[in-house]
Length: 180
Figure 1: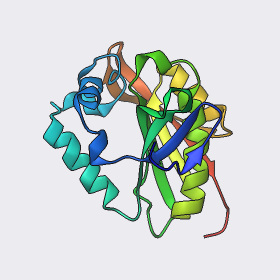
Figure 2 (figure 1 turned 180 degrees about the horizontal axis):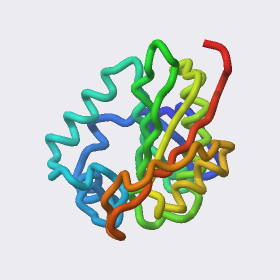
Figure 3 (figure 1 turned 90 degrees about the horizontal axis):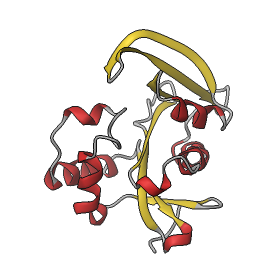
Figure 4 (figure 1 turned 90 degrees about the vertical axis):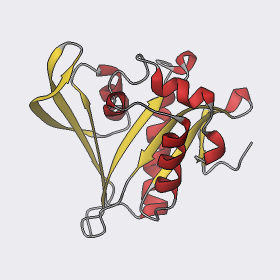
């Protein structure tokens, strides 16, 4: 298993690499259940487009693109979490994640990945504040952020068009340090 940057009870985080982009990753990005709440669902993904995304993201010093790996399963890649890009003036960065492996959805992997990525954002990027958002009907995602001490920063009404029609955007934040 590639070196972990952070280790939790059931999952670890490591740098996502081009070697992670294969048929399994592509299948996740084409699976309606996986991309149901992601803006990525509006793009037709190919192995080439996913490789380009990984290369572009990992080349940035202000972004962490991480593979979520199952510790009990020899570090099998089960999803991704991204932090960044970090705004250099404000010290803020956005967090987004996906659990691609259906066997790991609803088992707390996202919650644990958020906790680990939050720590890495402070240590590796020097982030002052993290932000995230989700569709208001994606309650499990919202609960994962709230369980990690993130604050409900409100809703932006009628921001998204989802399966249920027009939906609010549910926003979260976590101040890591109050000084710039």
